Length: 484
Image (cartoon, rainbow, N blue to C red; front, top):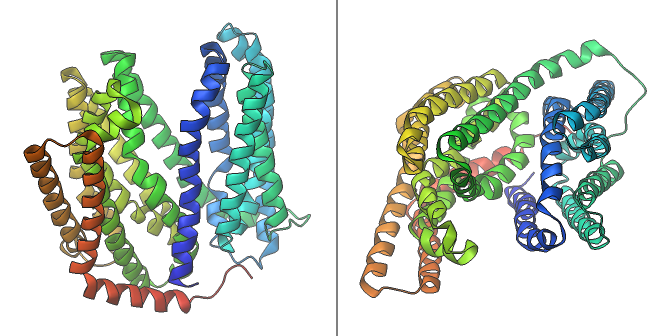
């Protein structure tokens, strides 16, 4: 696989997340005028049950299978039927729980809604292994088109049902159509076709691999739930809204850049799992590239947070912009170092992913419990401090024998973009202070400075970057295919 194809595939996957964000800006204002808060509320009660069951049904088996040659059809088929079984059981349990949920929340309509949405759990379970085969076969552009078609069709369905007076069922219909269409297209285009075989011992390795990924997902789910509950309890629901909005922006680098790149790159890294030297070269090259792109972009959005939040969201979200400015350093660093989780997963060190997730979750919640007493700004500062202080520990757990190198060599890959970003932020602040620019001009200045920072970081590291990219290109060209 060529480096150019990786870039194009990453862009394709990133476009899916961009569409999701754009769809929210377009569809939410429309649907909010057609549906009542109660309609959103009842589906909002149902979705955590569905999402948690889907997380359990996934269990990481699909990601594990990407590491297995597609020619081993019996192993793939066994895992497929096992995943379908998990999904069927969880869908049945969710539907059976629906009457009790309706009683607990005193919402009779919740019974039918939760029962209908249980179908999504089963559909997701059927979808997982065929999608893993697409990932292994590098069908990323087909995956992107599938996602885009499913998202737009689901949103169109929601609007049509809402216009017809369907109420909460507009949101239910959106989910059902999205998952049904995505499943259908994936089954059609995926190279995987299951055999009627079931050899459980062949799935044990994948269950072990998936167990740690499932634990990681659960730990992350618990941490995200706890921080929201703590902030809501101590500072009120308005503070939760500000916190949530700030982190929606703070997580954009992972959503639009790091996440798509890791999804595409994982299928390549699994082929290098026995070559630590090659894994190390890929890790440092990708880290440098991510730092060049992410640091200047996030840094300038942080510096220009006032016009960004005021123009996109209105002045009432000014506090969210201030909070974003404080958490931006940590979230930018997390977007860059997150490639470490992909490396660990590719070489089978899933326990390290679970361990680092739990460790950081504990550090963050303890820090939050102390900081939340002093207000929302201190919550933001404490998050950045927790992330920055935990970073060396995360690298130590990743280091030998996975990527080699040292913290000093790792810092060198980050140093130039960090310095350039600092200079760019200082220049932006100085120019804005001298000329008192309008918000639109501030936005244009921030965007121009970010692009200049990316170009400058690339230019200053052009020699080492060229060496790393050439070595990565040669490595990727020499890789065998698992999808045959």
